[in-house]
Image (cartoon, rainbow, N blue to C red; front, side, top):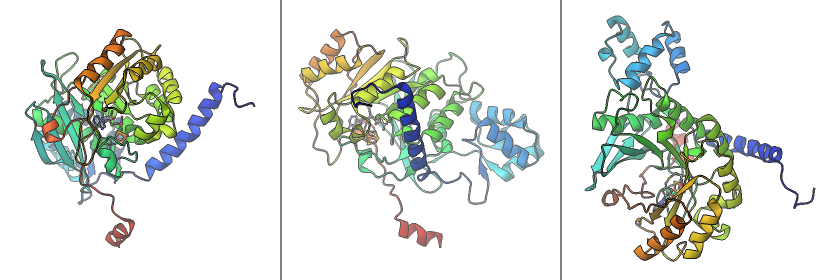
Length: 403
Ligand code: SAH
Ligand code: SF4
């Protein structure tokens, strides 16, 4: 076939399928530890409904108990079996013997002068990740920014997390646990039903890590959070941000139907190759094609293109015009994020004039282009500033510990 012939969609699918397998195999190398306490009790948070029924059967209980437990864990937010009042005392004691309903432990919590709250959570193996709650300035609602990995394999040059090597993936228990623990902090239990206002009203998978490199755990966690008899957060209120893991985008759209945000940051491959090195693997044309295929995108549910405004790097009017050309035909909005500095980075945010001029060009083309002023900057909680001290144990060290 001559190289200029169009690639058929079957060919794209086959290519994506083999890439997906490769990504999933790599992801498994960074799997989280099984969520079990030192005294052998099984963590119930993070199990699917089916798994919950299975572990109950294993201790000789009827699977229908899963529905009851689900309600107490995810609707009521109860962590203590003795407070599950619809369950008889002897069974409460038995559950307590075998299981635990836990939370990641809170290492530190800081609240910014703009009320943004950053949590540093520690998991059972001592690894840590950050979660941020960003309240709306005008209404009693807000977004919880959740981490999907400890560290990141990608090393986008503008991102603080990118300077921390990938330590491991977070498990479903740890991903759901971040949301539940943040909710504990605001006392928002039981889960508000239907359209009742919520303080923690949206989730953005925009914390540490690349969620599409930990798809299985992220997907499991989001299914738990979306379940109508528990936390019951609608898929319309969840946004996953990716630096552009093209082969996993289709899966995410088909299986979860949540909103998508793309960390674009550059409109030419030569520049994006430098800023977001994953672009060398999945260049802009492939990324945009995957956006066109994304099933959840419609006019009411637009794809968000995140664009960090870095002074004299990617912020010219010509680039704004090229951005408009790229997204044409897509239900899209553009978030312009002035670069947030962090210790050790040489980049600077764009000037006010540049931000305004760039935004105007995008808006004139009919797209929303809000300029996202940083929140929680005084506590290093703003986009791209998250980083923990966790490091991957060197192999020699972990062998020594296992011996
Ligand atoms: N890995 C995913 C999810 C993390 S989201 C992704 O990259 O999309 C984190 C968001 O913050 C991304 O849009 C990222 O590009 C942005 N970001 C990273 N460093 C930043 C910085 N220094 N200033 C502003 N935004 C930044
Ligand atoms: Fe990883 Fe996203 Fe940071 Fe890039 S921007 S290093 S993909 S967390």
